[in-house]
Length: 259
Image 1 (tube, helix red, strand yellow):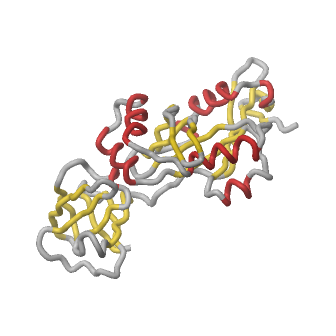
Image 2 (spheres, rainbow, N blue to C red):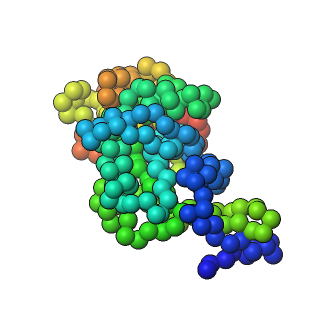
Image 3 (cartoon, helix red, strand yellow):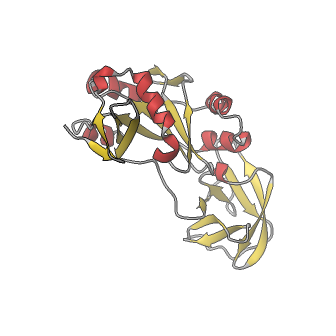
């Protein structure tokens, strides 16, 4: 049995068969700031519809700069992979994520910027992460083939009932320093425009001022139902075959750089 010594106190692993799934979820919420830095961890029980049936998740991570989001399913390791976990994740990864899901997240965290959250949920497909209290190696190949990440968050307790957790395995997506979003060249809808990979990362508004090649440039923001585009005012020497990203510059301006 693995034990952990912290400040001269021994912590013993807590059997997952002695806790409820809801209790396990609360432990994840309690330590979420340290487990998932740069993310908000939010309860997420809005019904999700898919061609495989309806389902509810447990929680969601939203990047604090609105660059991405991750749907989390907390499972106890004695749950059946084939009868429970796999069908659950099949519904989640094929789910239709709509405005009501952004509204549900906002109700749980009303200090978020609602328009940016709406843009994120509307335009960016989420990641998926299964969290278990004990590592189940035989789960990983199945979940990986489904495009689902897997992490182990194990709970330990000392003789006085104080708890700590350890985390191993996969983590939610991270980004390079100052990176906000990639720009994708649009060849059909607006030939001179760039599609924004994660529109929620950008400030609200119908225009943007950004630095390109050391000079300020202005852009129109065009929001379609399932995509957001940036169209430059005037003519800029952007190479059609090059890849670009938007960064937060040290001067406070947004900046377009070639990857």
